[in-house]
Amino acid sequence: MRRLSEHEEGEIDGILSREDEILPSSGFAVSVMDAVRREAAILPPIAFPWRRALPGMIVGGFVLLLVLVRGIVALPQLIRASAGADLRMALPSVSLPIFQGNLAYAAIWTVLALLIALAAVKLSMRLGSGSV
Image 1: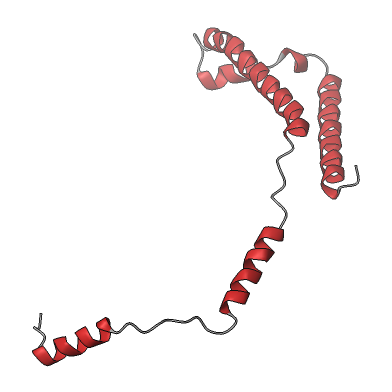
Image 2 (image 1 turned 180 degrees about the horizontal axis):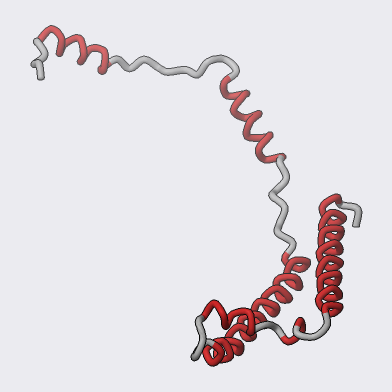
């Protein structure tokens, strides 16, 4: 690193010791205050609609709990079924009792699930458009 000469140090000291008053450009204070007023006039962010979302979250949690309980209950059946056979052969034998009967039951549940999904989409579109 190069050492500064006395002349260079004197120049730097002179530049740094000046006490020139720094003035903002014309209109700066006005533009800053305009920006502050614009920010203050902006509406606060919309709060999340917890009262509307909470029932769906509760139902979703309940369904998730039922699926987990059913999976835990079916686990011993899967273990018993796979005790003497290969695991790949045992998996098709374990199924939900709701679909073990007629194929019509499966179709009914599928249509019911599609109708619930359609109702959820329509409701969310209606709530989103603001035409409640």
